[in-house]
Length: 236
Image (cartoon, rainbow, N blue to C red; front, side, top):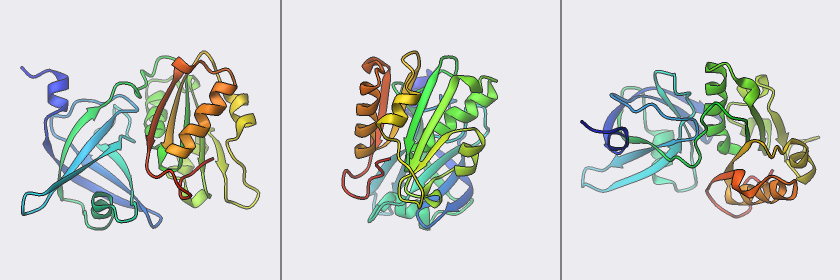
């Protein structure tokens, strides 16, 4: 009998149940994954596209859904010239079938039973929303504190859900906005919690530096970074 890691590593056909667009670049996919392994908040899935000539391309996306939800929800941000994200954002429709495997990753996974601090920038809020939904499902929302950042309100996925949960929200390029700067991070750092930081390389490097300066133990900081390091990166 296959173990969970073996099952998670097996490619399977996932049916697209719904497609919802967020702004010009984001799309929310909800997938029915048959015989799936239930994920932990923070884990990710890999989607693979296959062309008629056999060419394949795959990318990883963090689960947004909580473990108890029937469908696997993924947030995809279209990146310039992105062959996979562009296809998922512009072509995929309900009823389509995508190759999928997962969940993958243990380092950036929250157990839902210990204190946690989630810090996310832009689309880096995706795994934090999964943590939020899981915290509510298990009746322990007090264990999770969230701080998120985006250029403007329109650039923040799941804004209403995050605000309703009491997340600290910073808009760095909005009139009257703010940043997750050293002072803000120092105020929310918690040496007794595991800090999960997700976002662009520039954002996560800044947040890691702020956390360390605030006395957050290095061993308690877990980072998931992605994307460009240039000017387009969200930096709190």
